[in-house]
Length: 430
Ligand code: UDX
Image 1 (cartoon, helix red, strand yellow):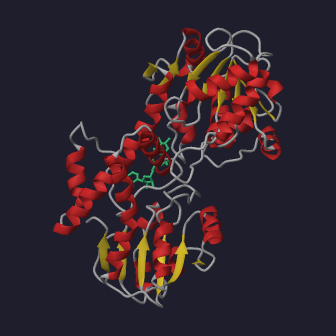
Image 2 (cartoon, rainbow, N blue to C red):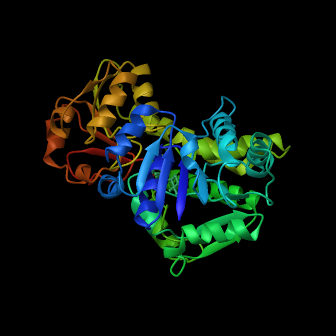
Image 3 (cartoon, protein in one colour):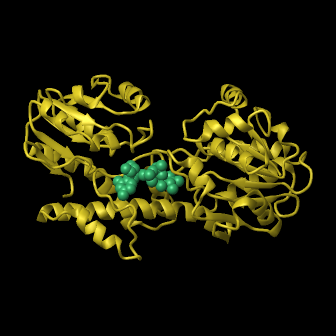
């Protein structure tokens, strides 16, 4: 098949490389010339395991990037994979999606046959049918369902395993309004259909499934964090409790690690967006708001726990972990941000370390007053207290390094450090 992709961000690039790997001819359109050049050279604009290999193999062969929408003339299917950033009230800004739809609409009439436009961006229910469809019709003079198809196909990729998740998804969600659009999506994903459950549904349902998926997972973590906070009050080990309840199939063992909460580019943005969308519809989503509130409180609880052991004003305090999760350079909504802000507000001298240099450099721009060190040992050296914020595997191996501290307080927000003699060790929820 000939597949077009509008947008070469995180999702668009992963989609382009993986669809080329499925054997399709892929054209990727982006307004950014430097990204287009990079892709055509086989270099990934984002860092994801496996992506460079795929681009190396297919760029210039079956995968081409361009700034010109007219190059989409031969596509059978075209995905809109554009960002939907957050407005101040938590709602999504659809300006990029609308601009992409406008530009695509301008060339849609030149595409032969019955092209199917697929919204891949995360958008609230109604956006594909009521915003994207009408823009495409207006700009092209064509009609949805008559001249071209419209579909919604959300993604569930995790950072750090996006390629693997794309190749081995738990499910595929095809939101369509007509059989030809559905056929087109089934052809795109033909190589997965034997092994992966497919949800064939409507456009708004597909849009909602994405939000429901992320809202459920984020709320699940907030729920185990709340239960963990109660466990802590009783001196009960929340991890033993989580392991036990996870044996109930209806609960499931995953996403039950309590601690300092969720961050990243998806959960905070998507939960805020669906809460804002619900409010706009006149429904107050009390539980999802509570999930956000619990998440916002976990870093404060970690700092409160620190306060019970040591007054950090003027003291050196080590922060271990800056990325929002291990194996990424992404610090967006990382729990380390409110932790560092809280420490600085208390007058502490903050020293920090993350195994990912990219994460360090981004944090350096945000917190230039923090001292960033090259490994855990010099970071812990001379510190009154240490706070563990990201569950990087290398923190699990830390042991004698804690002897370098001048104090002995270790507050663990991710259950990675071994409790042992000589340390005043506090787990956030155990
Ligand atoms: C998430 C979803 O998993 C993915 O399906 C969606 O498409 C995008 O959002 P991602 O943000 O990459 O992916 O990270 P994920 O591995 O899901 O972790 C999210 C956050 O939850 C991290 O901050 C992590 O530390 C935290 N988390 C996860 C917990 O605190 N406890 C857990 O048990 C699991």
